View 1 (tube, rainbow, N blue to C red):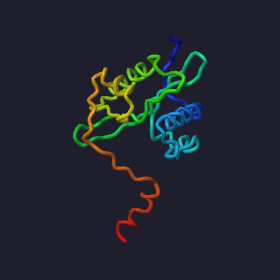
View 2: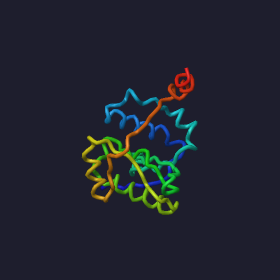
View 3: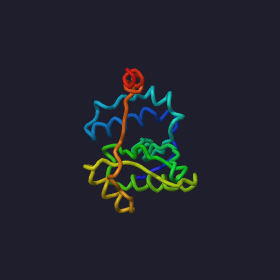
Length: 159
């Protein structure tokens, strides 16, 4: 396996990070739902943390984007928003390396829970998560509101 360095992202990594996010949206057949941009990520970079896996050519091949949350039942927790790979770097053990780092961060930050989601059709990811004893549940459903709905909520709900 090639040499991989895992480190925290820097602002000059944002184009590469967005490129991997875009590849992931294509993989998930959801490119039409991708409304983010490099400029938006740059403006909002204080809202998240991100580990990058960089190969020996200084190319970012994986990202793990996360943030801290507070769950009323367990307290301080980490939410892993994305663990995403460049399409040419899959099945090389880099994802496992990144997960190891994510677990170290969660432990060092005294998190009581580490949570992420996986699509029910993503069998390779589900198998990998089952190998590390993830508790994969199907009890909870997402309740999502896009920006337009957020802005229109009070008008719609009370009219």
